[in-house]
Length: 465
Ligand code: NDP
Image (tube, rainbow, N blue to C red; front, side, top):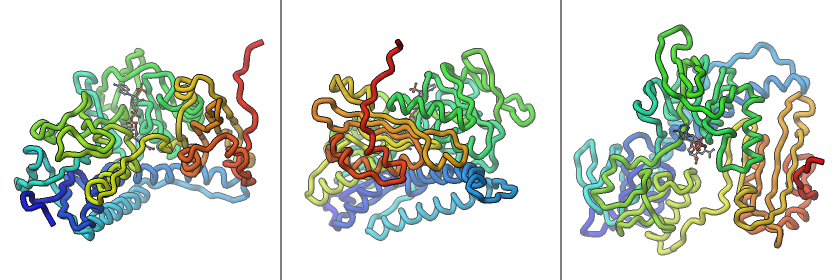
């Protein structure tokens, strides 16, 4: 039952993965719970992130499978790709999932407001469309983030670009897609569109994509982009964009290095920012950092006792399963009297390049910084499947091992199904497995993953003689 002095025991702002998990669990205790979502239930992941992106990765991958099928004896006739057919199916599935999110909330007894909520004070919110004001004993901010783009002063012509929010709504494939950025989103979509046969160019300000990942992974992905036919331009950024109105490629990008590119679609993938600018956090006294992220402690508590925050809006680790865990921990702690908080170490993650990246734990550089000496085991090999199909891609596997007690600190894989492998390996890493544990695990033959337990030779850098 709701606290007499408040309309709700819990009001969640944002119907994404973290907010929905927290709201549903809290409501199942009999608490009076509401969620406000201004767009569609499901948040970035379901509506314009992980889910449709993964479908696009699958769609893109079929091109290669069909090509390779010939080497395995299949006769393949003329094939073509119809973006409308695929996009219709993808959107239908996204709609279905969004509906499930909505239904699950309602079935748990959560009241859903399909409108924006903003703070009036630490326990009061105003619903923007209806103008209604509600009070809640606890408020959970779970509004996520959105793509960041430079201002038109910083990048004249930026209005001619799209972001990952709009990329799913393209009705036809671009003729020449230029992507700015070298993070998760940039490299994933570069592969998606190159795989669909689109001329694709990626412009990155650094020298090797995926900053923050293990150096060997970065190199493998960088080379992999080029092998997939993506033109990769490094060490420069966009200076300005003009709509010339000319032919098929009307957008001219002037690069800071003096060169230019002509494109019909330009996608900015230069990072995401928390969506707090119009949330009214100042009215509630909720402290934000310089990027607008809600500052929280390990219990997802803000500086205001009635307000918590989970997920991308806190800018801890911007991944769906993390938001879900944070939301779950909040609900258990506040509504089930089962206090726990999420441990943000050793989170397995994947980048859905083609082939994909799976990684868990420390990079070699992080481990060396933390422990000094570390042992490295690594291998690059052509997987069995590629022996017949002519695919030149090699798998990378790397173990970062603590030298004194042989604990495996990090595992990094680039190769088909790396995401599936790293999810399982993540259990071992979380349990504190040692290299000996890996060694005494029997290999499963023939598989790509068996190499994880058969690497015996420590890797030593080659020394020029
Ligand atoms: P990232 O932060 O991963 O990458 C941003 C990229 O943009 C970097 O390459 C960065 O360069 C570059 N950049 C930043 N500012 C500028 C600028 N002013 N001019 C030019 N380039 C710039 O952001 P994403 O948008 O790719 O992804 C956001 C987050 O979403 C990820 O960190 C991840 O947590 C999540 N995500 C997860 C996915 C998954 O799990 N598979 C998929 C997609 C997103 P530099 O390296 O030099 O800083």
